[in-house]
Image (tube, rainbow, N blue to C red; front, side):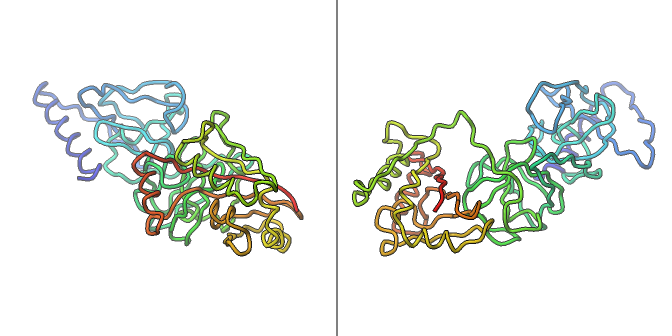
Length: 344
């Protein structure tokens, strides 16, 4: 059953029960044609809806609206996931009065799962961009991380979003093709694949997401002495299975490791500033250690001579590494990001 039908059914039953219990029905004065109103749900354990300062569950509420009360909706925006008595949603409405705060759609009877107002005018800060969700994007569009993380919500095609920053993650197919870029939504900890939004470019247009200071990272040093010992490949596998004492949520590999590959250095020199390229390493051109460590990885040319390298350490489901892939699904191992920067 959809959230809409469930919400309408429960709201009607609540109204009938109230009328039978009191013998009186309250008629709300008709709203003006240009006004959109909604009623706060009433259910056991849900006595009011919180009014929040932003379209997310972050921060303390700035007000409350009692169950059964009507509020006037100003505009909508997608934000953090919020649970209600009959489901959850990432859709939020800015309400008039109440300090111009926000109420989650999951707490309101609007008669629809889709937005019933115009989108709120976007306030785009430095480094952020405004984008539109591509048509045909499904319910699994929003996730708690840049990749195959837990689904946190959905958005509809044509919805307007403010994108805060980008991160590397799992390859995701969408209406715009495939991409490993993911955008973090402004005012939220949710991510949407770049292939699911229309930004007018196939390259990242926002600032890169800053890694949390609480994230533990492993810095892998490198020297020519351990060039033939699969030093990096073994350390990465240890981090995957968390057998390494210093296992972390991401790994920074010493730039010296990449300078060992003449093929990679030549590729970097031929790239244009701003270009992003997938580099398919091979045993013949780059050696066993790099091939087993990274396979193919992404290069972003940031200046005339410098680049950043990103890779998501995982294993393909339909390959000889399927057992390693399944270990991550079972919780025995954990996928992570790999970073490096340097100049040639």
